Length: 255
Image (tube, rainbow, N blue to C red; front, top):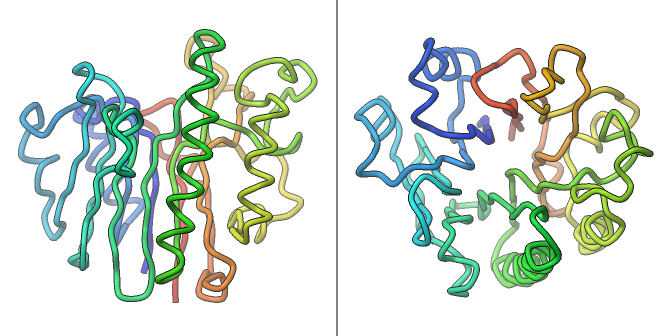
């Protein structure tokens, strides 16, 4: 089974230049999780609502159109689908959709960005804490896999210019400390676990500065797997040859 995660920075934009079709052809997912869809289902065309062979599930922002949003597509019919954490403050932005499968929970999350001032950073940190508590409740029943745009680079190896970004959101000590909490709770960063010394492996690049051309990027998108389920993870990859967004897809293969 192959699970793919991708912040698409606007799902409807993938119709341009064949990015959607090339993604499906190259990534070959069994399940794929999209973040920052920026669209409600009624705004989507048939190619996004029901790709051949997939069941589709969506959670979109209730606060404003064209903002945030997540989608989950699955060839395997989930036992259950959940929308949000049951906390209105966090659920109204359409940032989490989850699916229960026979052996695990899969949570697709678009974590908040901490920019635009201290209030938004506080929101991000409170979302972080609420999410980890929510994941742990689910984990009491079966292992949890969560993926998506975490909007934080964990270690210096995970961004091209760590020193220059020490005071910027996405690499602040308190943001990085939360990922430490995730790891200490027993969740494995699959890519770093399987590629401990790989440098210049990024998932996001600033479009305004054409940073992708120079690979001046950040690894802020992840697959975390509960430690007890990690033996099933056979591969974890970053697909930086797939275009269409300021992020690239990443994937895990499960036995």
